[in-house]
Length: 408
Image (cartoon, rainbow, N blue to C red):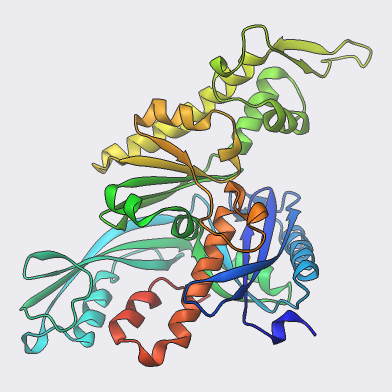
């Protein structure tokens, strides 16, 4: 008897530049809770580049292999999933809306109207609105209101954060998933998913910069006063570090990747001046292996991280934003000393972000590289709670949660 007949299943797929990760969980009775029962992953084989599908067949094969592993481990059949999306094509903008309050008391209809006005922005025909995220409501200049229904006033304003994506990028991701025999329930920005399971409520109130550094992209989200204020995707990630090592040290890319994982350090002073690393010979096959200072690797990696972090800092400063702390997650967060580099650049305390999860298989899925897919699971669970609890839920809450979701 398969598990799928016993409890409701949640499935999340993170389609990254170097690998696809799939995780299966059972929805628990407690709202927002789930228990992981299976995982699977497979290399993309070049089917994804910087978050964009460049080879559908290769990407489909990678997704299928990851799903097969997850199904085997979870002893179930997967039919639908929530899917993450990233890429430099992602755009974001803060918008506002305003309506006159009918009958001098805020109703659910007023809330629906003000959100509609906020999302009525001009954007290119080749884009789609991925998310409309409520920041705060304002009633007659009274700011910071979270639940306005029933409150008295004349004017209702709302501030929202809108995230857009290229339509073709979305459709290609969805096409790959559907060709695997799955129905994509939702398409969610990776940074939103990861930050939902990685950041604490206190961090979001105080002001936190979330950085998810994957292989092909670096996704960021800035939170302050409990809501998102800024988001962006950069077309640089851990693979750029690998390329730097390959080019500077004259070694093949696969060797550079192994070198980054096994001997990678983000600062020279993390190793002794006498520490050395052996590299493959350059040129003729009969040449001897080369020996270099370990600190040179730190110099190369520091230089690339500095470029990435400085660009992020400059973008934040341009919008007048300053974090109280920084959280770094994603596969590159495992790089020794990366937090020290971030502290040098941002001048704020930095911690490594991991999924805030304490259930089954936590020893596997509570690593930085699983933050996005675990966040997608949490998003899927929350969306199910909205659907299952809609009868007893006020309309405002349903409207609010609806705009966290996307219709593929």
